[in-house]
Image (cartoon, rainbow, N blue to C red):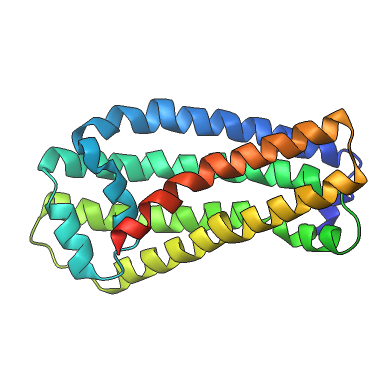
Length: 217
């Protein structure tokens, strides 16, 4: 993990990761997700509840409560939509946290060696969750009365829960704490740009699940 930080061009690697993430993020929303969000209307937020269904009964009841057209839209929102989106936010935050870690020393730097990978861990878990949910939704599109193995929603929701811990708890805590430490060590214009972009990115990406998750319980 530390090897990435020791690369001669680590700064450029992290910048490239963030820029690539912005591209993936924009493409996933504009081309893969927005065209399929219409059939869900105001119920788009219930996608989060599907992620955290945990039981086959809850997952099935939620999915079949949508129209057949909306079920197809959900499958497209999951794959390739959210599957691609996951790597967009992961790359953005990986790059920005990495740039922050390069400016920190001591314990915060040592923790950052691991913390910079939290967003990509969330992306991986998000992808696993999307593929599992896609399988569930696809089965119910073909046969609304299909039986769904209890393992599938449980595994998907477990992956989603750990994802949210990485994305909405661990990454923001390190980012905010790291920025505070960074302000004491590096107050250059470049550093301020990184601090600002990181806080903005964390806030923008984390706000939606923080608003939607409580409504699911």
